[in-house]
Length: 334
Image (cartoon, rainbow, N blue to C red; front, side):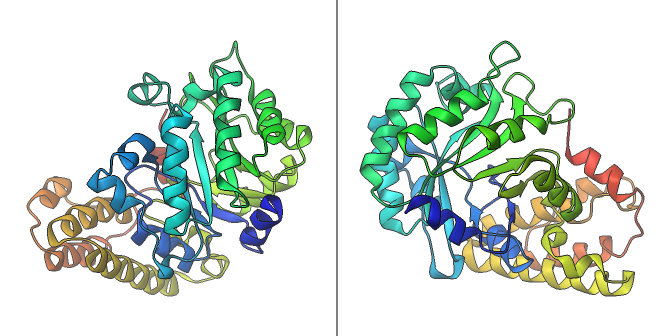
């Protein structure tokens, strides 16, 4: 049923783009899948906003046939909002509904959402039970952290509870909420969860390459791996063929992918939104290269998609100023 559906969605593509607020919209999700990502999860949607038919929430909740299978992630703190929001997503065509239980942002947890759901396991169990009953056979998944803080490292407890109430799969980011993104992610926590439950577990945290993803799967036994910040500005990370290309072939590949990404942004967004989205991704695509002083300030003056493309063509031709490892470290902030 749900577990079999998740395994079918994973298929052979077990390295996947992680959901990231303001980044994993339809355009970037499609590009990641085109580059080899397994099935993807959208950026979080606030359940209350969706229930109250907020315009932006409704737009984020759209699923188009061109998207392929997409898990839709919800952020909430009660069955009263999460259940109707989940039913909306099911009707919209979500391949699965994912509940965000890992966001560490203060303004989120202050309202009992995200990682705050890990503090009261009994209440969260009742929420997940209500979702399970409402969604029928549609896969229900959760994304959790290692715990609230070092005094409450309860990922295993939460995972067992989730399995007991009928959750079909779990993604684990092993840092606690208190750690946020500091230090190295303790991947052994993922292995602890894998050994504690029978449902598929996806690992997440500090993965910057396919090789590291394979290593995580081998060491922890997780069924798949999500890659987040390291894929920003580098969606070709998911493509095994890219690893075997020479520098010239890589440059041509990158230019094609960026061009297609910008095409998708223009097709899916209003002109004003398109320029904003393109500028944000442009900065990521050219990060780590040798650019003239003040180049970031130049981005603010860009007013049309044509302007953005022209600046990308110029900046992307600059040689690398830092190694890939240094770039990844900068994308994994303390």
